[in-house]
Length: 195
Image 1 (cartoon, rainbow, N blue to C red):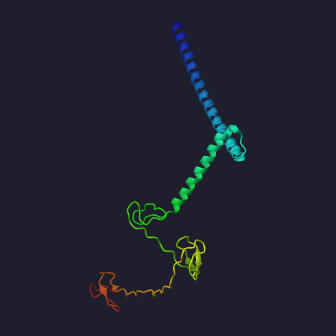
Image 2: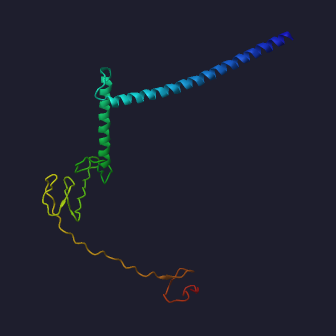
Image 3: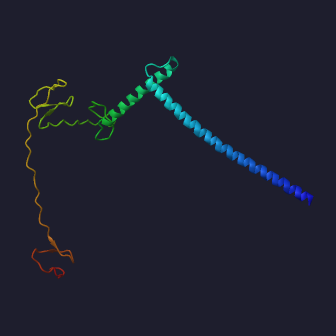
């Protein structure tokens, strides 16, 4: 019996030690998670501090920060250049045949080779649109006052009256057999159905 009691005591002690180690590991993992969360918060605060300093002292920074401030200025210029490129691409014309983005003054598509058809600016009732710069001028002007380009002369276009297609009357159809009926028929001549 003494051996059995000794064995159960050792097993119980070992189990308690394993449970305690597991609890310690769990507690350590929880605390490690808390540490990483606080470090992440601290890094965000450092980032905000750095951004505020860079904005507040963009021209009067200390010599220790010169290389970082120059790098920030360079990246800001790059961002502006990329944003401008995005705007240019959004407003860029596309090829009607293949959909490729066209160069600003391209006469032919660089992908499929088809000729680029540029829409002529329409004359408004108030004036004409300069094909070079897009400025609106009075109809009586011969040259654009914005860019000096010669303006096209637009002759009034006479529009033809729209052709109106008259609808032919729909033939009367028997609801029972689908045969065509006379307009005044009271019975179908094919199936005899009453109308």
